[in-house]
Length: 247
Image 1 (tube, rainbow, N blue to C red):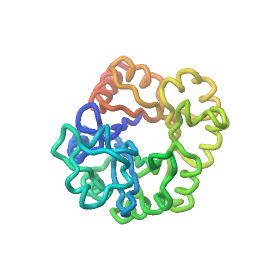
Image 2: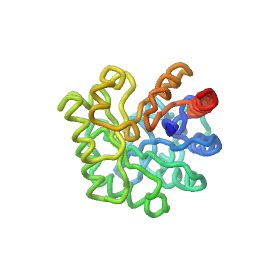
Image 3: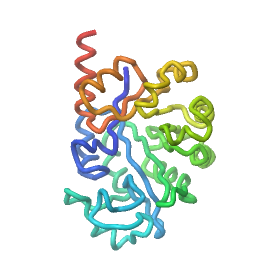
């Protein structure tokens, strides 16, 4: 059965990468939840997607420059929540049983944060969550660093048109398989190259992201990929249940 992953905590339902979203997604029965981690210059692991604050928080500028004092007062847009740390998110998610897809991000220049794989791995281990987590990245070098830092924590490689440009899609997938056990491919790229992808990857190791409409979710569920990542995990679970009943 395809595993349903709540993208950024289910951002079509609740504020993106928010503690409210993470609390709520636990009650949906979702199989996994995905979220993003940056490293501030002050050494804090911050859960936010973009390398800048502007889109999702009531602030501007690079995430890495946020001080602990600023963070504690920095609200997310359309939410009473403040910008969470990785520890705060894991404290919430430890109460559930879903898997975690923890994406390691880069700074506003596109540069990976030195030491981020080691810090994320140590925090997952500290919360007892290494056994139900994947460390994820688009960047093959970051995945290699994750493998070196914590070989026992599995990894997921995300792939889109941009990340596949340098090596080409087929070589990117083969390189990813050396570093990760799940390969999650952006849905339009996956649709364009479906047969070529299946010649390299078994379905159970393949993920599709990010279908959000009922029709689109149904399309990918019928293709039986191992994973489906959606901004609306409640809808995705509903469509999965309906298709199971009609099978």
